[in-house]
Image 1 (cartoon, rainbow, N blue to C red):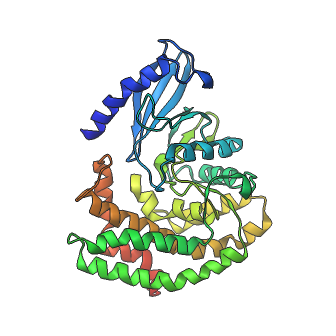
Image 2: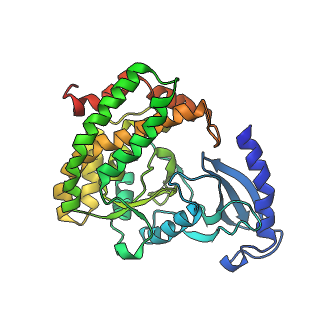
Image 3: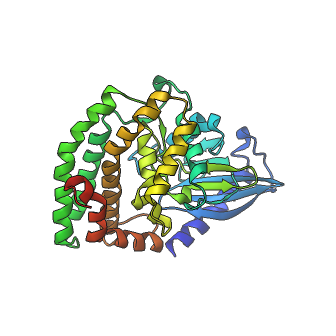
Length: 346
């Protein structure tokens, strides 16, 4: 109901914004030839489909941030500008964070067609998409992205804060609290392995939020698009690859958990598309070091979200998200992720 009310609240404002010419400088003329309809909503954005003649666009209304930045919509827009050469992300057309007509930051981007990614069918396409994105040549000095300078410590510090909300809550399950503290103790020592990434950096644009719902597969052109760029960073490609393959990711919107064969096939397909021999040679080490920390970030966000949904959550409540969070906050599931790393058990 809250999601519906927000959609209705802003839909007319989006229509008037376009009709009155507030986007004219970006090529959207004044007039009545616009149709605006709800497209998709997440916890942090409302997306509308804008149709004018035969053209379609996405109009995005930002309602929150996952990166603790007041300029969330501009951060995302600038990232899309950097990503444009890849050919697999939406082209950005306009950003407006003035909040003069609409009281939220807004952007307009390309509408891309396609169906949701299917892990059973589309792993090779996703691998090609990651390779296209990770090989965009950008000087570090010329981008605005948050840098993963000490990637394992960055995750550890972030997760320590996120998990504290669960630890402090009376809702938290004691046995889960105890195991999560054990994981944190292990990670505090294991993060020293980030020296590997510091000594041998391979910086690129990483999405950091690569669940299947953020991909669109356009079968006619055989193209797989990655369309949601709320929280990109300047970091190691292993961040995206580990996140994409994590059960916490694949199970977020589907019931699929990658088999070892599927995982190896995906990594091999990615490696074949990467021109850097050095990255191909070192990718296995990067993935091994990063994987448990990507799991830690996923379970920490889940624990925080599980707690917040029952207490002080201010975003849009999604019932599918709530059910998934409950399935993740299950001790046997959490152990299946971390026991091989922290105790050697399988």
